[in-house]
Image 1 (cartoon, rainbow, N blue to C red):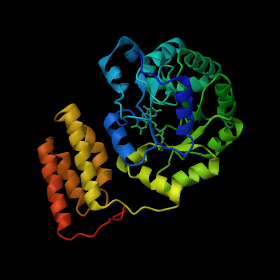
Image 2: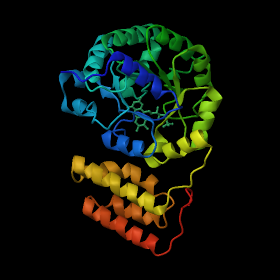
Image 3: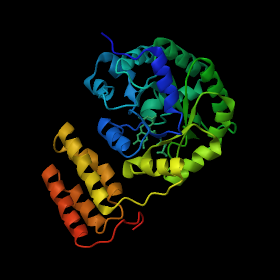
Image 4: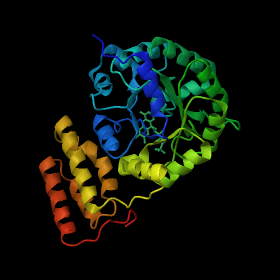
Length: 344
Ligand SMILES: Cc1cc2nc3c(=O)[nH]c(=O)nc-3n(C[C@H](O)[C@H](O)[C@H](O)COP(=O)(O)O)c2cc1C
């Protein structure tokens, strides 16, 4: 028997997600997995989005895709993001993803990388606004879950970005929220995100708009929300190195409070927790390897961070990495100052 929530509960829960200026973990391929979502949630993320899931893989029952859409009971609220180039396949896949009972289904219309956009998926939808809107309408009809879109301000280099018009049309076909990465597809990750487009979109639609791009601190999160009027803010790259950014943003948004930088012990504890969780899930050495991209950021400011990082990068075993962290902790215990400045 299905345990799906009745529609009225689901609606209330969806509205609730955007009620208090959520600070959201961005979907990031090979980053925003179940383990990282849990860590970010522990550090204040209000809502998480899975890394994007290929609809063909999902519909073929590919193990990789199936794992990405599996949500543990405590992995909530989490949305599942899907991508593809064919509207009918996206609609079918949305119905499959909905079985995991995510908070909503998010459509990736923003990925710029050639292996995705070059095949008509991701940001390529922005080149065909009519098809993009029809595709979104088809997905909306295919599932009783709310459907949202994450996109960019345009393909580029238009002088006047199409996002405001597209946003209005997406709303008209039943899309329930839009996350706007405030760059063009052509910009990739270069140049600066221009949040003024999020404000323009916000003013043109009545569904929630989430501002994204270059939010690197609590102050950025506050400025991004206040300068655009958006319902919430999404954080990607900064979270990879500093998941504390969610608590820091929450404290500033909710209480006007600036949290101190995490202490050396907190930094070391997060390294341990992430390594242990990844090795438990993925084994050695892969679990160690895939944690490395986070460790430099987690350790930033620790006395002797460069040497600790170097040692961790050359050890493929959990036991070895934990011993390195224990040794670093013993050094901290011998009287190093904390909390540590981020820039040290
Ligand atoms: C490693 C990495 C993987 C990403 N994967 C996805 C993805 O799967 N889906 C998506 O919509 N965006 C993806 N993005 C884009 C981010 O969600 C976000 O829009 C972008 O990084 C800008 O936000 P930021 O400045 O806070 O990082 C990815 C970004 C990075 C750095």
